[in-house]
Structures are given as C-alpha cells and as structure tokens.
Amino acid sequence: MSKPQLPIPADFPILLKEIKARIQQAQTQAILAANAELVRLYWDIGRMIDQRQQAEGWGAGVIPRLARELRNELPEIKGFSERNIKSMLAFHRAYSDPSAFVQQAVAQMPGKRISPPPTARTERTEKGQQPVAQFPDSLLWSIP
Image (cartoon, rainbow, N blue to C red; front, side, top):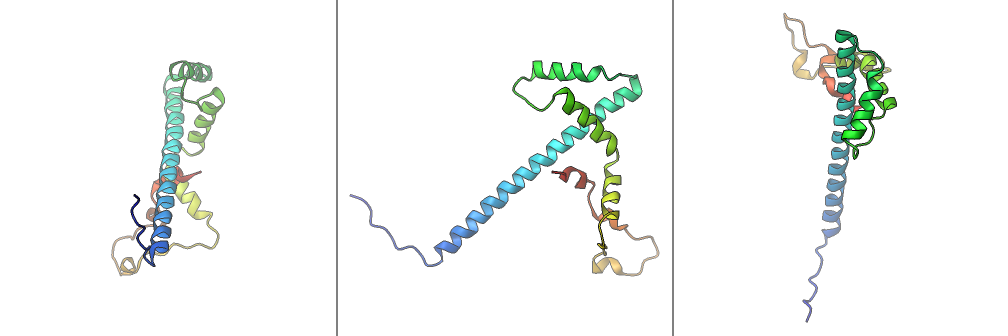
C-alpha cells in the first residue's frame, strides 16, 4: 500500500524556485573560484619560469623539456603543452604586477568614477584611500 499524497503548500513553487536559484548561484560561484585559481596557477607558473630565466639565464629550451616532463609525470592532467607554457610566461610578463592591472583597469573604465563610501568622505588631515585601493588585486584573477 502506498502512502496517500499530502497536499502541496501554496508557496511550494516559490520555495522550489528559490532553492533552484541558490543551487545555480553556488554552481556559478564554484566555477568562478576554480577559474580564478587556474588563472593564478598559470600566472604563477609563468612567474617561476621568468624568475629562473632572469636569475639563472635559462633559455627557451627549458620550456619544451618542461612540457614533456609534465606530460610524462602527470599524463592525466592536460593543458601544459609547450605552447600553453609559453602563454603562461607571456601572461606573467604582460601582467607582472597584479596591482598595476587594477590601476590600468580602473583607468580604462569609461565614465566610471569610484566614490568612497559616505563614512570615508569626512575631513581628514591624512591622505585618504585611493579609489584603486578599493579593488582587491584579485581583479586580475577574475579574467575568464
């Protein structure tokens, strides 16, 4: 014998809609967090290679070998071809200072002006926070 069906509350569709929206929001946030971490990883790999090239005079021949070794030692992980590693190095060199990226991005915002919150508009004798400081340097990591 099956149990009798209880009547569905009138606001059940609203609850269902809210829960679905929250699930989708969490999925989007998880994807964005994973993307940001990958961008950080690619930038950091570029930084490590660049530092060694600068300090130890490594040549471009290191990159093909690095790609080969990564493929051999981590065969299940894709995305670390010679071409991609060169792109990681170029990415780091183009944006070697993440905070400068924020300043550049703010400067290029057409007609956008960042105003401090009302509590920050009070008279001070010391210099106030620059608008760029209101953005975290993680803006670079948000690149899709």
